Image (tube, rainbow, N blue to C red; front, side, top):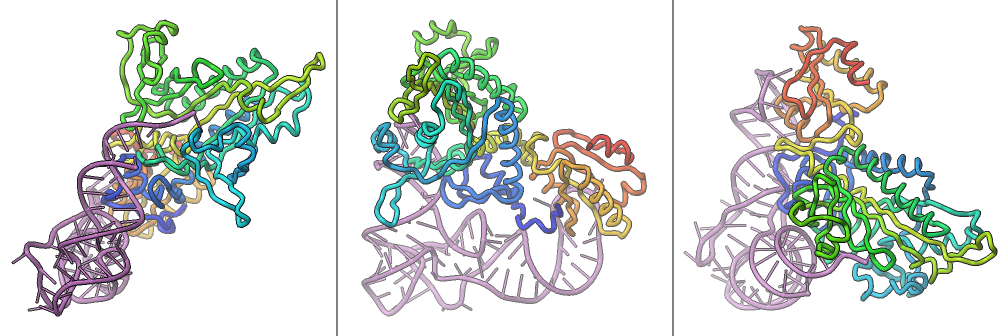
Length: 415
RNA sequence: CGGGGUGUGGCGCAGUUGGCUAGCGCGCCGCGUUUGGGACGCGGAGGUCGGAGGUUCGAGUCCUCUCACCCCGACCA
């Protein structure tokens, strides 16, 4: 893409109404626009990052054999009444509204009810199970206070996977497979070495749930982490009793701030029972389906990645999520430079990975500062100077120095 | 939802005890000079001062109500 045609622009100054580093940088660099508190529009660069994150998650879900669907945003009150979760006492962050005929509806904040109800129409026999079904879509939660930029919004993009098993043993297997897939996802996103499986409160059908917590000062959770065992305990269940049960010692644990990027739950029959999701087993007896749910905050991950990797010059995107692989920067506008840059742009565009071509008539300093702020993994400079040396100047966003490469070396490196 | 703070061109800000055509920086437009780390000169455009009501000869400034945003706390099924 040509940067001259990108409708967004970078800003030199930080927005006055953002405190969090992720939102400040993402707004300055033109990735997101704040619509209102906790509600962000994703601009061309930001949408590319968001899609890239979702794609990694999608690939690992598909690898598990999960099937993707899209559920509705509008929620049927009657369905939620059956599980008792329409109540504002039980769930205090609903967005509720009304149809023209005064029927109450809600905006989906999670989707156990509609999916469980949906499946009751298709699942009859033990032969129909197990099933893994997921969705990636916007969810709405009426948070009392939105904060931390993309980390806690009122409207956000989330992946939720739901599992449906015949019995507890089968459920446990699925649960562990999903946990492994989660490790793989966070590793692919570059967060592997700072994301820890964390014991957290489990709800009504399991003693614990597992959170995936990424270490960052911007996080809202406090966890107690054993670096050697790579296990952590959320502050909410940090008691002597729990530590004993988990075989953890208080003096081995470090109190750290973290952001919850994933959370997996065993649900038992909490939803299948009231909503009538049953199957007939091989003995001809009707049974409730055993369920689990597995969330990953896609837009939150974008904020967490921004927080984790940014430096004092701007954003730093891991290659898998970067909006483009290469930032081609043209310095000066001599005919030879323009010609060389255009040629290279054409070649790199076909090369895959994506290239952002800074073809603007701006000073070198402005272009470099913008490139650093936007945070694309490689910066490739074309100037009179590089043409003289007949080489291409490539610098990684995180590296100190640029290297000069000939064309073959360059294309090989960027392939 | 409790406490604290902020709303002034697109962005960041200043604006004195109420006073005359509301300023500054960035950005934007035009012309020229520049071009390897946010260049420079000259000339321009752009503002219902968050909104409503009130006090006053006169309100960005004072009063009342209201909306939005930020921070701390509580909350986060």
